[in-house]
Length: 404
Image (cartoon, rainbow, N blue to C red; front, side, top):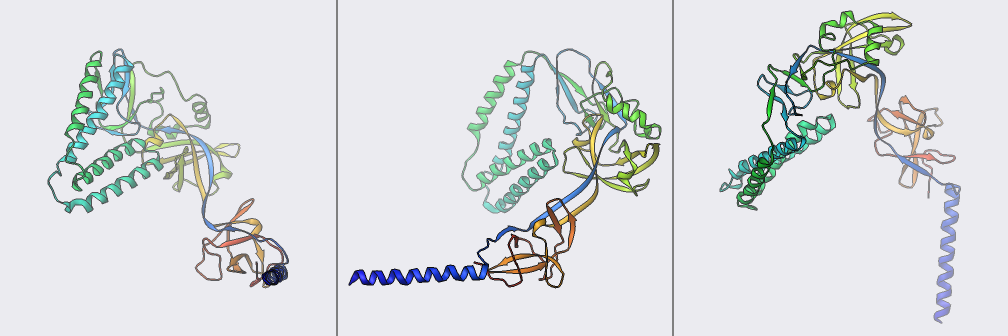
């Protein structure tokens, strides 16, 4: 009896499975639907070129013997009495001094946190906000390539975390930790072999550690004398014999210029008085620069001079750099080009998966790539939306077609 019931149940289930398979074949034709998610995407069209920096610079001299250790990052603003470099007897002395400075910063952080011992938790919200802000600043500095500023933000983050620990009564103080650090500082001081010579800036400005020999020639106002031939010579030979005893230089003003030879067709419509958006090297940061002059130099090219009043580490390294002018920017949803189709009304769009069926969504293409397109984000429900599942492979598609 049980065996007959078992056989009957198996037969019913078999018929049910067959009906499902037949139904799917009827609705989908046995085809396979593949999809790809539409996501936000941005693209910049850029014109690359090599340029020569023109800046007002003053050399910093420091006589003596020994190993030179720089105390300031390139592009950092310094005061008249700021120590920009130190001469030590050996590389070991430099390493010891740097470790001492790092340990002293740790002691300062711990001491500042201990000032909250005995206070209530009323400052906890402000401390948590400081933690979040410091973390965001670190990420922002790293994205901009400003690693010196990221280190400063790291100290602020550590101090905020220690304050939070004190406020929550998770720690009663850092006396033992500070004593251990001070012991290490004493050991390092005893290992330093000799005196250290401090080299100061001498005046206020923006510090650069490299010296190339062009400091007195390639000034801010030398732009009017720059020829295509001279620019190409400097690009081919960016380092002349530097002045003896020069350990660095100062940029007196945050204004700087770039001279370059660029084909006219690459910057059609860009004239003196225009403003262009430029990226320096691999930096993600965009700089708006004024076009000071455009001087034709033959062969369909011109000498372009650009000017900016924003100075950072990315634009202070070396005499020449690779630049990119952003000529067009596109933003929207990225979609595989093969997904593009037309409906019965000859409207351009794509098919997306909605539950167990497909639906047509219109698109407005703003950029055509080799294997993808960028389409505008339109709030109308008839248009493609962010995170829609776009059909990339499927036959005989139509609006409302059922799929398995």
